[in-house]
Length: 293
Image 1 (cartoon, rainbow, N blue to C red):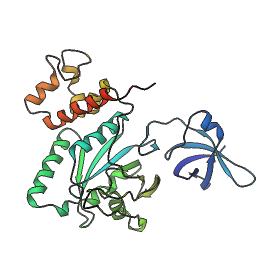
Image 2 (cartoon, rainbow, N blue to C red):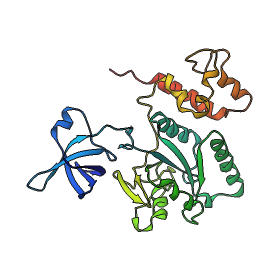
Image 3 (cartoon, rainbow, N blue to C red):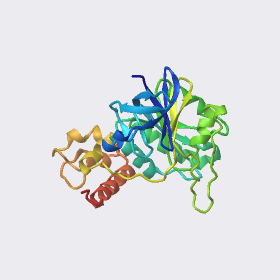
Image 4 (cartoon, helix red, strand yellow):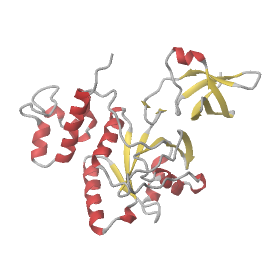
C-alpha cells in the first residue's frame, strides 16, 4: 500500500503528499471507532479505489502531537510574538513555552514589529530577549516591514517540520509572506478596542518554504494545561529543569519546601522572579482544574 504525509486537512478531506503526487483522501470509519483523528504531519497509509477516491487506512505512530493547533510529528515551534499591537506578553509566551516543552518540541522565539518601537521600548524588549537567550532559547527580533531579522528565520526551517504559533494578530502570516512572497496569505487588522487580531488562518496546512515545511495555524490567545500535572510543570521551565536535582527533596514543587535549589536561584538572581511568579500561577491553575472522569 502507498503511504505519504498529510500536508492539509480541510472539511473532512486529507491531502496526502507521496511519490504519486498529492492524493485527496477521506478517513475510514474505523478511525472513529479507534478514536483516532488524522492530523496534518501524520505519516499515513492510503488506498485509491477504482472510482479514484482515496481513503486513509492507517496512521503511523507519532513522535508528538499538539491539540491547538492540531498537528503531529513537529520538529520545532516558531513562537511568534509581537513587540506591540498587541503588546508583548511574557506570561503568554511562558504558557506557550510550557506546552511546547511538555511535548518535547524545540521552541524558537520570534518577536515581530520591532520597527514600531521607541528606543526605550526596544531596550525593554531586548532585556526580555537576553534573559530567554541566557536560559537557552533562540530568540530573533524581526520586522516584516523593514525585513530586519527575517533572513535569520529561513535557515532555521531547513529539513524540518515547523509549526508557526502565537497570539492572533502578531504577524505570523505577514512573516510567512516575507519568507515566501508568493504565498499571499491573508493578514489581519488589529482591533483598537480589544488589542487582538482577527483570526485570518482557518485551517492547518504544511507549506514548503525553502527546504522545510511550515504550518501556518489559526491564531489563539490562551492555552489550557489539559494534560499537564503539577509534577510535570517544573520540567517545562528550562532553568528549573536544570536545577531541580539540587533540591533536598525529590518531587520538590519549589513552593514551600526547605532547601529548594530553585528558590535559592531566584534569591541570587539566576532565575527570573517574574518567570517564577508565572510558574506559581500555573501551578494554581492546574490545581484548580476540574478533575477528569
